[in-house]
Length: 491
Image (cartoon, rainbow, N blue to C red; front, side, top):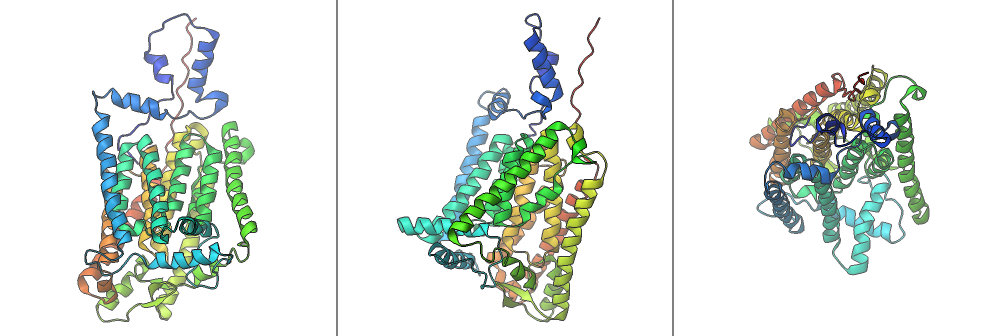
């Protein structure tokens, strides 16, 4: 996984002043150059930079005496309260009558991290290892804290994911408080599982990449995308969704060619950094071994494609079986559906890439960096939601990916989502139902009980609606924000 929540879209710095501000002195050469820079979108033809956080805060403060302070206090007070509850839910394991614990994956992480931190290689022999090699770094960091300070692995891991959540909230709050509020509510609705899995780390990297693009910091965006992809593969989809003008790169605007080079350089930097770590630790062996385990998985009970099997189980059909670290349906039909899911995913990614890279004019030709970021957020959201709803596995933490992209879209003003629109509201409802299903009443789903089985069906139908809205928005014409034209001088 277009925002109007506290929409902070603005003209390029200086453009409004040139129109509204009364002249205070005769124009100088510096004034003319500054005016030209403002109207052309930035120095050296670069896209218009976004207003700084300080400027945004100053503008907000003019809306009323002391107005922003209570809102900020409410946001951070809510973050502290909800995160305290989530941390308590993780550290206590199975609480408040939940049928399942969220610690299952954490125990697996701890075992892998212990071996990795003591000279072992990637656990490719374990069919539950289905992650890129960068995930090993994320799992070993809490193990290092445990070794150096005797802090329990569970506590160190939660601190790591909580720091990632805090970084996302701070970054969003600086851009758009409504986007930050959506993120806080969304992670709370997902429950303790959000902090008990490392999906917050690649989600934070993907969100940081979108925000970096909105400020024309393409090298930083590329590095974030590289890091996210090495943690989990899905942030690579943002490269597929990256807007670019039609035609060969030689015909692109100069600022875009330079930005593309920096983007590729940032990705290469992240890959090179991991290569150094892998060479020093010996993790370079079997770095692609996780791909086989992913393709060998069956049809997980929570996957959207498994909905007919959930209904059949509710009516007395076969029950799911535990395999590859999850409960999944087996049998010839289920295996055929799982294979079809992989084919649909591949076709969707290829079709999206061909459509977006061969269609007509892109906002990158005439728009600003923020316009490019807004289009990127909408396209990436559509692509990730399609991948999630067509996947053979749909774990609860996958919804963190969609939450991050919706929050990023809200922050950069993407037309694909709006705070008052139906997509964010429907997504939050799906996320809340996901927590109710897991960990609260998961045994009821496994046993085929009617109420929870129907709730799972409803959650899956809600995700299909979110997918339809996101795809329809991304398939529409790209928003083009033309730079203000320079007024002709009077003779």
